Length: 165
Image (cartoon, rainbow, N blue to C red; front, top):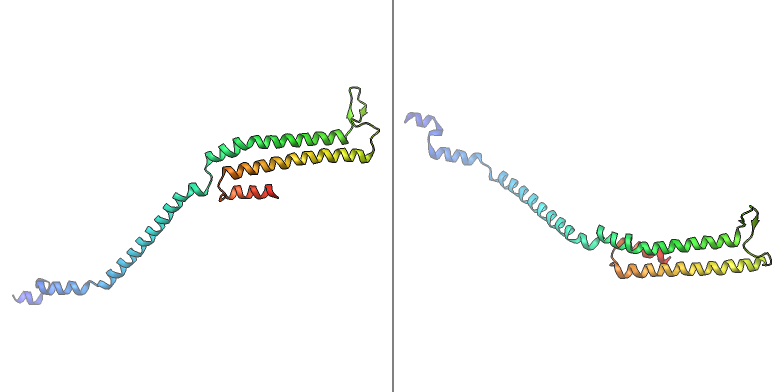
């Protein structure tokens, strides 16, 4: 027994007290608080990311919807507008530029007896009709866009602003 007195690890009560004094509960609590904070932050971020994924279809135009609406449906309107521009250019060419006939001589399409004011009046009246057709096309495109897409989309909003200006 004299050996037990000299060796403190042989006494169970003494070893238990020694181990308790070595373990600091304040450090364990600080570590668990840190882990709990990190876990809460990760859960918060996970909820935010899940909400973002849930909101994506409502906030952005999906690729297939874009192809269906813009690239196929509006292509007709864009082609009509391009036709109007070509007609406008042809009218300008007819009213302003000389044409060459089969012999290489230049002839004007506009009769020579018209005055400058009459030519300008004809040109302006044709120009007004072409501009009216272009405006009507813009109104039609705007109407189609308003009836087919929610107003929260930033792409549609910027296109509407361009057409209204």
